[in-house]
Image 1 (tube, rainbow, N blue to C red):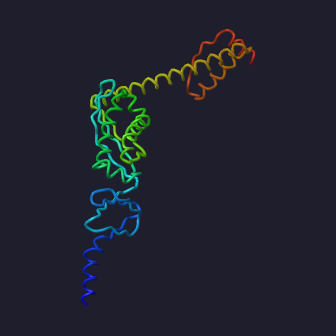
Image 2: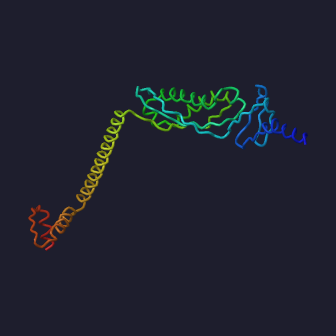
Image 3: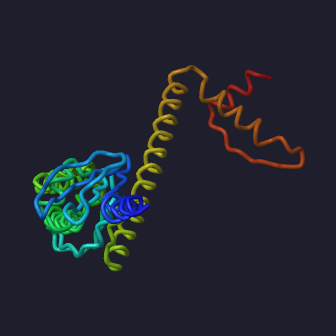
Length: 246
């Protein structure tokens, strides 16, 4: 009986505290007496209590919001820009040993890169070249975080907030552009119609009696109502055609 009690005490004080479960999406970093010992893969693991210390590192892709950054563009316009960074831990050992907080370090560096890169573009370029700006930010941040065992999978610019006066100016510019396009389309339509009329007139002029026939057709259309009286002055050539018809 005392032996059984002793075994239970040893189990509760030594073995039980040393049992760890590492999930499929985690890796365990074991420090023995303060020094790196090994990396544990997923499963049921046992460490030496009071001597070993294990830290779990999530190795899944993690989205991280970059808060709004006030940026002065190349053409001296102040805008607020935020982004999202997708990163993943490739080397858990480096992530734990090379920085005190790899997530915070990545976020801080991404904020700096966001301000630096967007500040090199003009406002119109920031609005139209989001993918190019995102690629440059990704390249810079990925290069820095590589020594921390972090892989930057993607960076996406999200919201670009403009000053209120700039929004009004852009709205007026867009409205003026729409009016200009409408005027151009209307002018092109009138030009096409005038060209068609000119071509038709040319064909009628070349056809013997064409103009006279066209005149008669017009008279037929405007005289559908018996009570309507229309007085038309006809040229001599049209009058001669009418005489011949009789």
